[in-house]
Length: 525
Image (cartoon, rainbow, N blue to C red; front, side):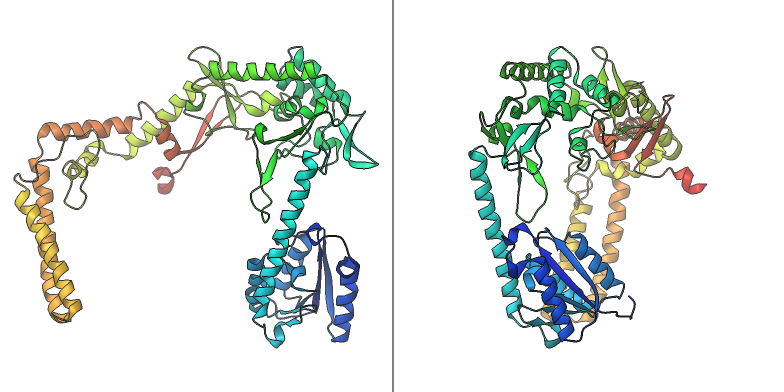
């Protein structure tokens, strides 16, 4: 951090949680108040940072982030706000900045209205005030949520963006009117679907004709990260399932788990708030019901045709080698599946199919794993090194599955195991005696060292005895088990997820595998 300091940062913030923009709380009045204060105190101003319309419940605000960057660059030596709540309403994070971040960067903090100046010392009431600010935000959030819920139940539209095909009534923002520019596209989607056209085909046709998507028509940020501005099957399905198009207001589809979180979770249809006949319908009720029945039939057919869909070995592991999209599994016959690029399925003009048989990819991955195992793992050596697993020690208490039972502990090895256990017990008692002062530190070290040597000798005898006492057929069974494991036949889902990170399929069906481990040859090279 630079030692250069250029002046004070005046931070202004206001959001809906603060209620109506009263004169004392307005952005312009905050600016006037803080500018006058800085002049009175003889403080030079580096910059004014304004977050208008941003919540104080989190610190993900553009102007605040810019101010923090200037502090870290050494440009700001003082931060001034109207009061503590302007800095933030989350008492934990607000306390972090006041008590840790600002002091660690040698930044003075002033909250004019709360008479707080870190240069004069932070008094004990600051945490209490921060808690009250947090409680205020919680209370406002609860009241706003209750008011919005009441409006939803009365059929008022409370969203910021109307559904595709509608616009807000200029005279009543809670009422929907038909948007004559986009409503024809909604009708076309329903007609095409009811005539038998597939959802993906509808999406591709709209994209090819350059019809703006719902986000594009409202000039909003694209909802798709990979291919923004293109129609997809999810968008078409949401339109076909939305009762808003038959004149029913359907809201409360998502909720926030906490007033401090931005993330929203999707609610099931039975928890939606639906009020009938609140606006002009775009689609006839009988057409909407027919579309719903067709969607339900297609879902049932998909589940019936693909009962083992979730059991595909390669799900989530195979990607297109060109566009990076996940590969979709397509069934051609009763037992034959193909992998195709998911982007190509939705937008054929954007990529190639990369079509390859699923069993061919599984075979290639299995062959590669077997090749690596044969090159770098000696089954015989591994069997010898693992022979002791056939007879678990007194410490372990268990053995590998599907292998012969361990020998009777009262058999030939019993005396050695008993002596090992007794030696360890004596060492423990000796340690307790040292802790109680019965034996000195020197005596403890001498006795403990001798016992440790005896333990090591007994453990070595046990290991050798177990190797020799195991019948030949049991050692062969272990070798067979290890050999089967390294053959990767059959290749199971658990092994794939553990070993394989990513599989990519190229245009010419070439397969590239990225493992969770490094090929030893690459380390040698």
